[in-house]
Amino acid sequence: MHRRRRTALTLSAALLLAAPVLTACGSEAHPGAAAIVGGQRIEVSTLQADVAEVRSAQQNSPQAAQLVKGSGQLPRAALHRLIFGRVLDRAAEDNGVTVSRKELQQVHRAAVAQYGGEDELRETLLQERWISPGQIDGDLRQEVQLPKLAAALGADLQTEAGTQKVTAALAEASKSLHIDVNPRYGAWDDRQVRLGTYESPWLAKPPGTEDAAAGQVETDPAG
Image (cartoon, rainbow, N blue to C red):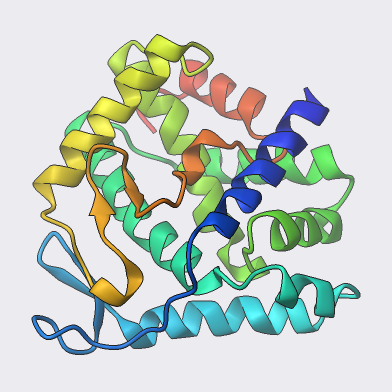
């Protein structure tokens, strides 16, 4: 189980390398916006702040040079994460799924235990998902939302059919948000729920969250 999770995380990061590096700037339709999601702007400044937070964490890592060199697609990955989070929020809302503070605390503890400490968890997610320590809870929140969304849909994420069912719900939510991405970052694909060729991160589970999240779906379905 541990090896499978780490392989998934590594694959998620590796998939970023297929996309070209793109520079942020305002589109003609929405100057200063990296994307418009559900009529709400994701400002270029917001995206830049997220990227800067990750870069700062990377610079403080013992593997700083390697991390920076290997994350040239960080701006695109960060924008994908911001958009996907809003899509997942809409899909969860549409299906009556909520996340409680208790659930988030539980899945965080499970992830810490899986990797042997908070520092180890932070370093792993920084290396494999390009996530700063301050962004971890937001990422883990999605890992609570997804199995609960699957449960609400009667889908099993361990099966192809279940994954397709959840993807369909996310695609529906994505379409309803009328996502418009600054062309310098590519285009959002509603059907694949991803930015250009960037693979949806929800297909990879962060360390220690699968079992904990599944238990939370059973014991705390209302959030």
